[in-house]
Amino acid sequence: RYGRLSDSAAIVLVTVVAVFTNLAIAIAAGIILSALVHAWDSGAHVETDVVVKDMVVNGKRVNDVKYVHVRGSIFFSSTRKFVNMFNIAEDPTTVILDFKDALIIDHSAVAAIQGLSHRYALAGKRIIILNIQQKCVGRMQRTHGDKDKLHTQMSHQVADLESQGREGEEREENIADSTSSEPKDLQNLKMFEANVDGIDTELNKLIDNNGADVQEVDSQHRA
Image 1 (cartoon, rainbow, N blue to C red):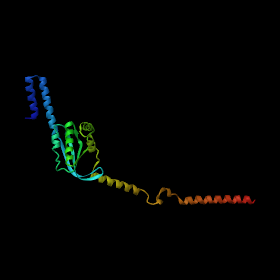
Image 2: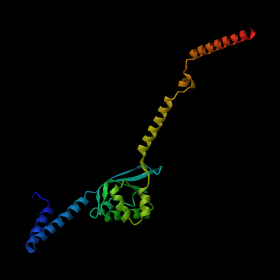
Image 3: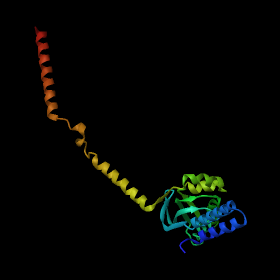
Image 4: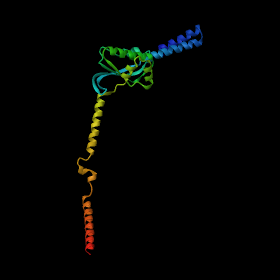
């Protein structure tokens, strides 16, 4: 009444196997059943957030991009649900899979992604793969059938159009601020802000001193 059906099934299995064999085999059978049930439950928790929007791919604007944010663990018990989330015939020409919050655990997950990529390519469409966690990259490279194609799918530069616009506005504001902080006239530069009156005074003193020296030399010459 208060437990799950799988727990009750594990108890019954352990009891029956223990009666006909021994307790060690019964416990092993119960562990195997519980592990399979846990794997099945974990596979049911794969979810996606799908948004169709304009994005910037490799510096070019692409309209109607299907952006799929995948969450959860993808392995043998969740690949069917993951693949059924896509409709190749109705999807746009560019589909982005973001695995920032997802784990690719086994070969079944890699095969599912590879199968999707192949079917999209046959339909004249492309899949872009983003943000695969570092511990999953090695598994993808080892088990993927076409490593060159995988590298191409993972090497695209993708940016949101709204964030790209905000970055452009911030860049323009920074340029405007730096330009406005510069002096507009040469006269406003610090190198031209010297005291002109002081310079004139020094020049007059030099002229007077030079004139006195010239007169003294002249008088000595006449003498």
